[in-house]
Length: 183
Image (cartoon, rainbow, N blue to C red; front, top):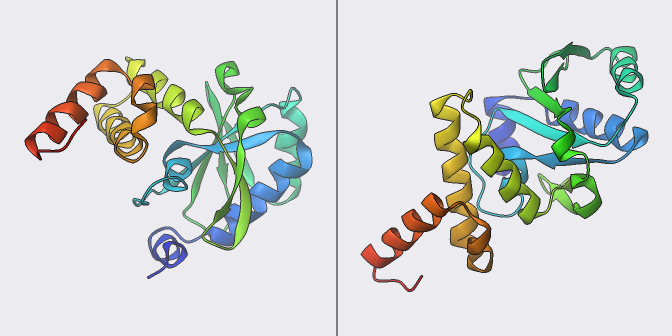
C-alpha cells in the first residue's frame, strides 16, 4: 500500500488536505508541522491529524476563507481546528507566535507523491517537538509520541542529534550501544 492509500483507509481526506493546503498557500506563509511533517523526512508512521503553522496576522480572513469553502473552523486556545466535510481528518493550525517564522525555513516536499506542500525544516520540527515535551499540560500519550518522533529524527539524521533534548540523546546512545552501533 502507498502512504496515501494507508491514509485514505484510516482517515480519508487527502483531497480535503489538498484543499486546505491550497487555501493556506493562497493566503500567505504556512508550513506543515507535527507528525505528518516528520513523515516527509523519515519512514512514515500512521497519524490521524495534520498540523500547520501560519504566519498570517489576519486570522479572521483565513477563518472566513475556510468557512466560505464550506470548512468548519473552531477556535482553541493555541490553534484553530479545521473540519472538512466528508472526512475524518483533523487539521490543527497553530496560532502560537513561536511558530510564526517556521514557514521561512520550510522546504517544499511531495505529500503522498502527489502534491506539493511546504514542510518545516528538521531543526524547526525538533524545536516544536521539544516545546511539546516541555508542555506540562500535554497528555502523556502525546508526549510519548513526541519522544518517538524526536528519536526517529535522531536515528535518521545523526548530525542533528546535538539539537535534541538531553533525555532523547541519552535514549539514542543507550539503544545504539545495546545494538553494538556507534553513536
